[in-house]
Image (cartoon, rainbow, N blue to C red):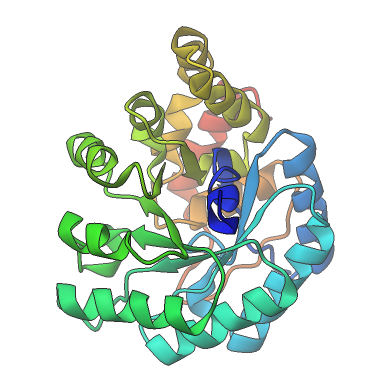
Length: 300
């Protein structure tokens, strides 16, 4: 077993793509972040993502991005794996962020498909290959065409699976047929993780190893139970718990994420009201949706 094989076994269960809490004036709130990290781990979350899409990676400066990853690593202190969001639409920048994540001790790097540039499949392949060759740490592909516009093909994933330190893929397409095909095609080489809360449990039933989640920001205990049970083959029990919170998977996307989940955590007295433009605080009409969702899930 190689070092990368060992790392792959760490990627499973409920993985929270944690928000980056901010004060009302938009500064990173490290005190609140530390408390969120501890709460997540105490609630059974299996791994944490620092500065992913949900962590507002797009509006943090390079220095803030690196500082937040370093804070995660120190606060987690080895209790669960830390996955650092280090993707960018600039390959040199992605290499710089990934190198920093390795230097401060993150366990994995999570790299989104380059957005806005609209690279070809060959461009996507060369981007990931360049980062993997530049930084010797385990890396996770992240395909989310709803945000990046470009969709990484199965053929490109299969090519990238041959690179030793590319160890997993976060599939946020929400397409179960495609997810099933991906598992059949590369599941012997890559850990397949869902990145879509509404379909995640079904994808695990098809062979995925876990879920990188928005919902687990506010319901970490329930989500950790769901995916622990599912991985143990106890699908009926997992379904039962999921039924009690499955409305959250939809309601937390009533506006652009992480606007709804930040409001929810504020309503739960976990964070202040900070969020960065061009994202804005949740509208009054959507606040009603989230208030009702939280009450239905017994979270307030």
